[in-house]
Length: 249
View 1 (cartoon, rainbow, N blue to C red):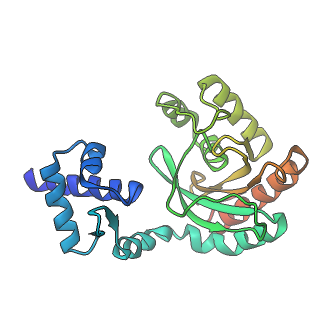
View 2 (cartoon, rainbow, N blue to C red):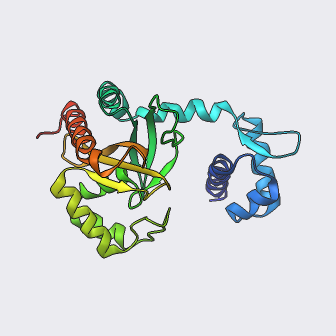
View 3 (tube, rainbow, N blue to C red):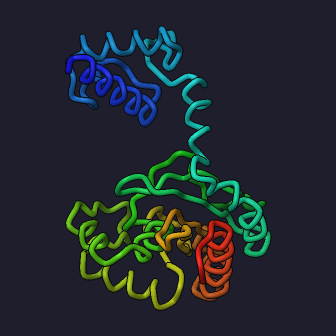
């Protein structure tokens, strides 16, 4: 049991460093809710095996070893490899940033981003965790889930990311019905102020959602006039990727 607890503590510390780097010992201990002595020992162990390092101000960050291992998980299910050619076409068609995300618990994780040539653009770092209710990818993914799973999600916390995030369960149910009827999500400034996006779910061979893609851009370009065109393009791209993964129409 002690060994298991040590592993759990190490993972919690590692994740907290990744989310807050660079970070000092005291702040890190507060973030993970562990004694400073425990966190210090854990950091020393992680440093010995090459996962973390401290700078000259004793602030900790991840090393490239963490990136190398984590990067291998970007395409564990083959989603990214199958999706990339279609995502490139979608980016050229829409002229905006395209994101690909895969599920992890109550969130999606960004596994690929194809940037637009525009200087003013949407930007999310690879590896960012994205709440389902607050994002175009998340709403598209959630709408593709069975109703009991949607209700289970709605029973949990629905924290706002911006002032326009849909956080009311009834409002979110209505939004998801619209996504199902339309075939794609529309999310103006729900995740990031000044950014709007459309999204579509990607399904696996069993028909269940395995990820989602989005077309995102600043609200000066992503307006009501382009939502339908970009939404249809996103839904068509998601359908092509789904068929590559073995899903039936």
